[in-house]
Amino acid sequence: MKRQLLTALLALPGLAAAATHTVVIEDMKFHPTALTVKAGDKVVWHNKDIAPHTATAAGRFDSKNIAGGKSWSWTATGKGRHDYVCTYHLGMKATVTVE
Image 1 (cartoon, one colour):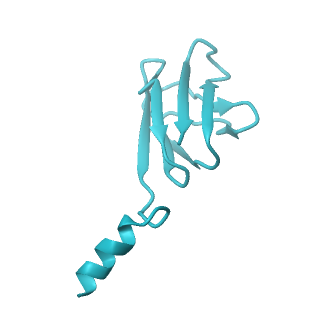
Image 2 (cartoon, helix red, strand yellow):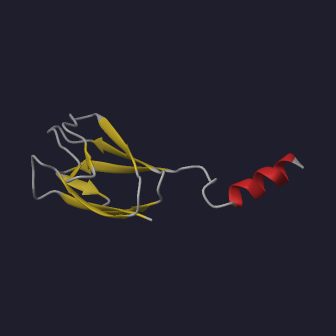
């Protein structure tokens, strides 16, 4: 009975557990370059480069400095497409779309 109730609750919109998504920063690139998440999901950027980087979407999020070997996370809110860059290396670009 408890399992059936839990299954029924998780099927309701908005009650499913939030997911965690990882963006790896490596070789001066964001991997993946396009990510689609749901509102409430967490996105974690993990810098595997030696150089520091940022994940910056104007007006939405700004990691500030992510040192090599460090991570930063952001919880997605609101719907929309958010293009972001590394402010230290403007050729590094990617997108997070929140559904």
